[in-house]
Image (cartoon, rainbow, N blue to C red; front, side, top):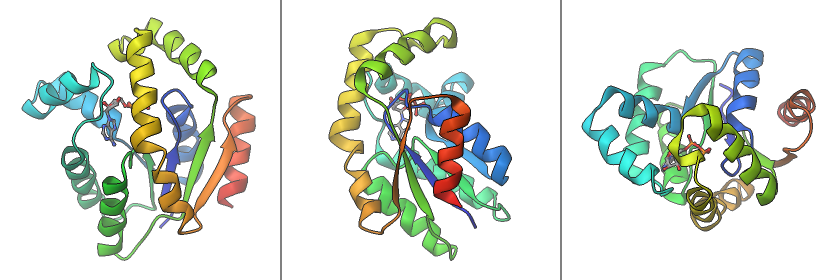
Length: 188
Ligand code: ADP
């Protein structure tokens, strides 16, 4: 199986590049942000609780996102591989993911990290907020909070995969095609 973690701060382009990787390598895309937004749209209890945190730019609890990923892995036993987008976002999530994959005899092949500076991230997110309808993209203070959460809790996950010699850094600025080519080279 080809299991990849697409890593990087909010606005780094993980969603855009995931779509290209999914069609090129026939992977299943698992975005915890998308899964949480589906729960919100469906009006579930989990969605209501998550919305409250997401609207403040805070992470939702580890056990919530780990549970969602576990159930997606269970319902796709014949997948060629998965691309994890926006997950794992904390060290406990990374440890849980390693264990879930090892239980089914597989592992993460690589963590691909898109590097984009903070000024560019804020610009992209405010721009996306204009038509995405995402309230967390429309307020610069909430965007800063998300970047702070990333620096405090998510950035350390890179060291977890670096210790396994799986970490690859890719410049996330340039054309979508050029960034995709760099990702492909890192994978192949
Ligand atoms: P972005 O990467 O642009 O912030 P996402 O859709 O990945 O967008 O995430 C949106 C929000 O969903 C996050 O700010 C957080 O509140 C929540 N979220 C998504 N994935 C996770 C996760 N793995 N752990 C905790 N919270 C998450």
